[in-house]
Length: 126
Image (cartoon, rainbow, N blue to C red; front, side, top):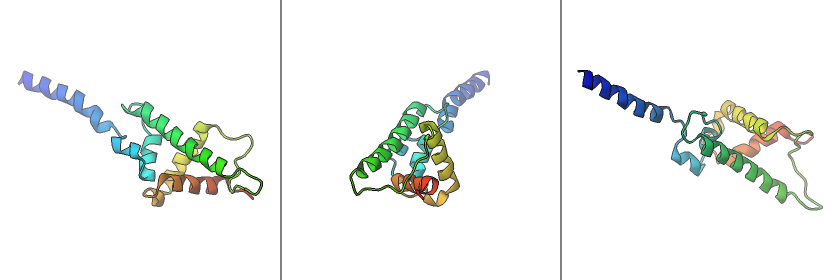
């Protein structure tokens, strides 16, 4: 009986962290906004936390930089007017997370689509 209790306790130690893990490998394929949300809102206790947060920031910054570069030129204009001073990257990611959670109808969209919906709704130029 004592051996069985110890075995169950040890099994619980190994299985519990796996059950609590919110980020899954498939999230890194970022096929949906839900995948990106999972990465961006990873818990610091998640074993993939560092990878998830870095991927999240890289994805969002990369997509935004691509947008900025596509708007360079004498006839280019942007519909997105980020305030000056601009919020920090962490603040912007937090705003994006809040927006995605409040708009579950976009969870199955491509993440870049949701990102630019967020940017248009948050900082649309006058």
